[in-house]
Amino acid sequence: MTPTRSLTPGALASVRAVCVGGGTGVPASIKALVSLGIYPDAVVSVADDGGSSGLLRSHTGQVPPGDLRKCLVALAADQHSPWVKAFKERFEYANNHTLGNLVLTALQETTGSLSESIALCEQLLGAVGSVYPASLDSILLMGITHDGQRLVGQSTLCKSETALARVVVEPADPPANPAALEAIKAADLLVFGPGSLFTSIVPNVLIPGIRDAVRQSHATTVFVCPLTDVQGETWGLNAAELTEALLAHGLQGRLDYALVNRRQQAREAGNVTGYFAAIGSERARETTPPPVLSETDGSTAQRSVVSDDEVVNRIRAQGVKVLTREMSDAQRPNRHATPALAQAFASIIADSKGL
Image (cartoon, rainbow, N blue to C red; front, side, top):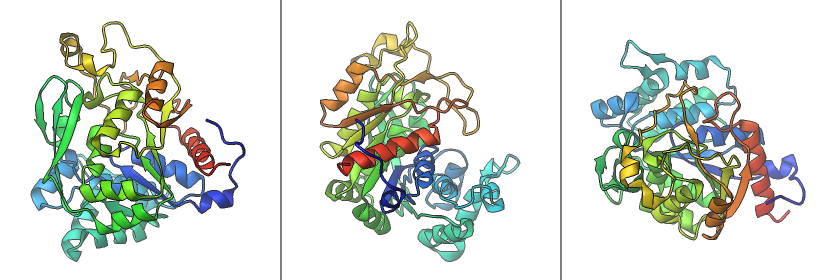
């Protein structure tokens, strides 16, 4: 898929975009869009229960701040400002909390409002877009793997030994954040991901109000497929299976584009082939689970998500257009390179506008 001509900077700047997800993935889409002159909003998952966010959630009862903080930092106008650096500062001697997490928590305590605390941080960081939690209430994430294990909690699910088949939230119908709904309804472009599919992206569309707003939106929808196999929750799944899982959790018939990395690297001998039928098999259970990458370490071994011709055709059979590009960062191959992701978004925008 290639546009017939490039969009002008003015045309790109007029695009209203919303990135949906959480974790370290959505900031990649935010930075790529900002580099095009598009200033997106972010709708962010509130299911995190691990690390600094999990501790603050359990101690205060507040919505976990970590994913919100990452998106706020990504939206900062000056990525080199002292405040941006301070927000990312992590204190190993204080339960490994980041300053940004503590500031968001303290502001919510003093203002009594999560939305107001986020708005104050947006002002402090000079954010070029807004960050909206998908719900103003924390949600509990639960899932079942392809070999029948039932798991509870986001931090448990993302370390699953075999791929997840289905996830649900508790309560089953958490209230959607009205501001997030308004942002989705006004969007021209909705970007899902990249990031952990079942624990960062899917939790947003499991909220009925968010899912309904996406389905009713006039926006072009894009799924940014993960580059690499780095977490147990999607261990062995190829790009088609990842796309099908997103569709099965509420976006069936509502996904316009899938953006996948063009590398067609074969699995190592003895590893899971990637097909759902194999995930719960004896061979899958014998496969050593992959290591989980930290936010700062991109050197841990990982495998590319398979996206060969057969996989791409399988995605297209779902009625989804596919754009394949080389998008991995040379230094951190588990991360998207901002220029390549930006060019891919520009192509999708041009194509969706019929240019």
